Amino acid sequence: MDATLQDTKTKMVDSTSVHRVGAENVLLPGSAGYNASLSSYFSPQAAAVHPVCFVTPQTVTDVSAVIKSLTSSDNGGLCDFAVRSGGHTWFAHANSAPGGITVDLRGLNSVDLSADNSTVSVGTGATWDAVYCKLDPLGLSVAGGRVAGVGVGGLTLGGGISYFGPREGWTCNQATSFEVVLADGSVVEANEKQNADLWWGLRGGSNNFGIVTRIDFRTFEQGLLWSTMTLNPLTEVDSQARIYGELMDAENYDVNASFLTGWAFASKQGLSVTLNQLIYTKPVEDETPTFYKPVLDLPAISNPLSAVVVANMSTLAQNSVALQRPQAARYMTATTTFVPTEAMIRATYDAFNTSLSLLQNVTGIMWAVNIEPLPPQIYTRGGADMNALGLTRQNRSLAVCLVSPSWSDSAHDEQVYSAARSLMADIEDKAKKLGVYDPYIYLDYAAPWQEVIKGYGEESIRKLQKLRKRVDPEGIFTRRVPGGFKIPDDC
Image 1 (cartoon, helix red, strand yellow):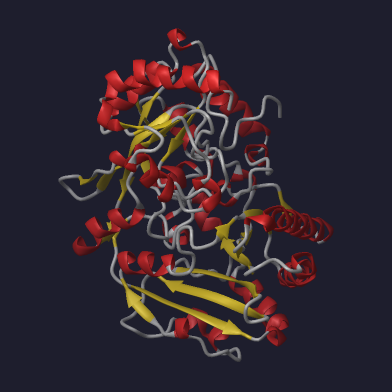
Image 2 (cartoon, rainbow, N blue to C red):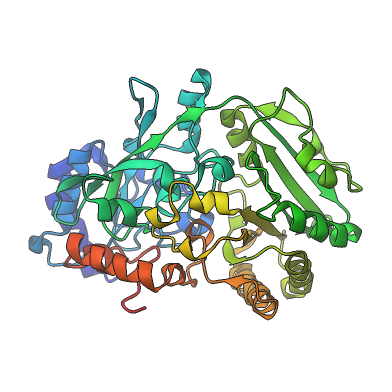
């Protein structure tokens, strides 16, 4: 960055944000707090982004003051900013502002249960494991994230896949109310009775309208969950495709089941395997759910993760961290969507297998492709028209296909990104040829080159455009918050 511009921005920080939120809540380069914030991001790519400062509001009033400061004409419009909740999005700029200001919401981490236990109010800087630690001892839960450390705010605003999704619906559809700081610094509630258009738009509309500081979620009674992870040899791929094609079909789906299947290649072992993660949310003691019997009857490869675990959400969320530890490697994700027929599952394996040739000499590569079902129960519970995701047109099971590699050396970043992009294109081409492609892109798995909100469809885009014009007429959260996925200007 130009030194003069850097100096101007630093002075702006000193003259505005500091006196509004307190010097202790503005973290400047070189300070212990600044370095700790960088090290708290999930991916090394995100941690490599160095903002002018981190601003760490502790209350919604602080957030309002920061927004008024950042959008004031006195500042000359020099500084972009970003908003960070859990910091789990992998790519640079999504939750940190290079040469700008990052508003770090982790101080807004309250978890408060209503008097009748029907609702939990959560600060958007909290992580899902903190929510489960509060609710598990009470025999309650919410349809939230599956991995400890994932932020409440980001997952919810992107839609939100949960172990409880088939039974309860999208995470965003569990949100009964949002507290939001708009671009002019005003604080509003968005729910079914107040600012209902904003309530709808925040359910999948991401960071385009303001800074969400609190979300109220519907709770439900919940005991322990049953889980296991199994591996199969690739010789079983045809049986795998047949079995999962049947299990994922809307007519066969058990709403207490949450699962994924796919394939992984580990360069250190020189081995490719089929993998299955199986969760059942209402087990009968420790009995194996009969729904999963066809999968468990497949020839298996022994692995330490295959042991059955019956535990609460706090434990499962912590266990999931071991699969991808923060900054232990370089990470990325990209995604596409299709109807999971037997033929399409088999075609996805073929695409996975072909893509391995694109990863020659990538140090420490773990190349994983997973298929996660979205039965109609997920996107219709709470009303498919009650969020911005645009899935009102569907009545069949869909599946989100995710590529989620890890690797060691930044010198291979572009090779991995290119391989992921080629793989997604190949899968989409195969899906179109089979007549099972769907344009929906799950925001929380998307790569920065993917046009997420375009996939919501024309009707949703027009409503989102209208909402943006109402709540942010100057386009602050479009122009000054360039990270994330933006609403297209046309359909």
